[in-house]
Length: 378
Image (cartoon, rainbow, N blue to C red; front, side, top):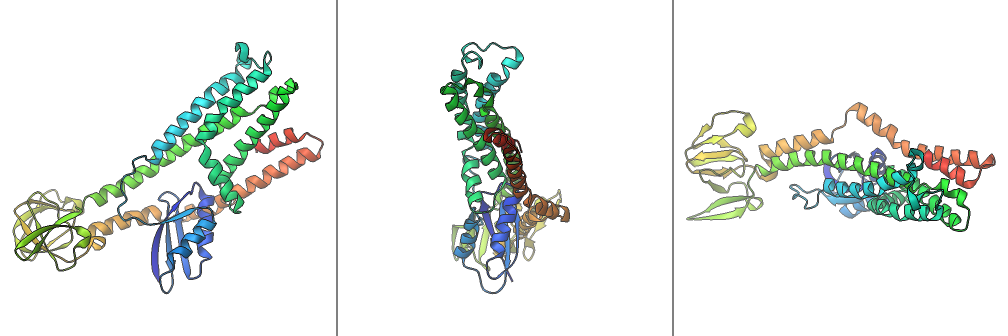
């Protein structure tokens, strides 16, 4: 049995998790797969020799998502997802608020002047059309991912947003054209404001979700940052600064006063006190001398130590803590697994109910526009 972890990009809901798990399970040799939406990672257990990376990536790509190798210590993103979603939310909000003012104004007793739908219906509709465009641009990813997964037969929440707001927009464009042709009564069938408000609310939810994910990832990043990335390696009479990843078991490292210990090992020379609060919670430094163990990420207080490396960077006690935290984030309680199964059917059921509602109203003699309005409402 071999375990491999992948990063999965493009997931937005439990339906996405189910689609990725279903796609990866079809790959020969995969015994078990667990996808976590919060960490955007897939833990794959397979039998025999290592699976071809391209095979796994293609299986995920065919489901409408992107697979990337798991990065042990990812760098901080310049433009974080929460910043991106917040900016897009502001764009959608700037579009939704004036649209709400225009659509609700007459009911609130506002005259709106030239933009009154009863006085200048075509100008009113045209202004609403241009006002909704920033919201559609802000929510462009919903349309890209939503229709992509829908065409691949695994619709998700993005598909619901894309189809719902897209249908509302196209219905309103059709009404705009008819209003321009003189059918001013269709001014009551404009739903530009509906599309903008839905996109603004969804983007707000995405921002809050990304903020929660960001805090989770930042906790792991801070743990990883406790271990230094450089170390002083003793080579005969020379002391060279090297990357921690280039250090091998048996190498001797020099740890100067005030520096953090890079890797787990045993003191071979020197005497000092080491702050091990990171691992043990002990408030007082622990005296270290020849023959005693030291741990990566702990702080050498005073005195130089020479340490023989016993474990590499991915095998240290600190790396074990990080691994446990990641596994805890990726683990699912039984109730969470049940929720994933139920929510995995949510999107197809909503599409089916919306389609049935459209057919029911259309076949009973109602217009296609009215039936489409019911479809969007569902």
